[in-house]
Image (cartoon, rainbow, N blue to C red):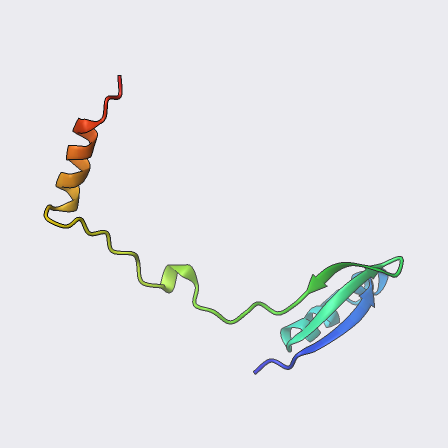
Length: 81
């Protein structure tokens, strides 16, 4: 489980301590990167979700006819030239 923390770090500090900073992010912390005292980026852990390639695919259905027949009929009905 990720803990919800947010810290600010300077760009210089991020560059010099990148490995430890990304370790903090990996443990659930969000970092706001400052340049000249102004926020320029937010680095946060990736949300835990199912990758799209693991989700079930959409099923295409055409009522009354097979999908391939419906596509072929639509192509015949189009005036392409």
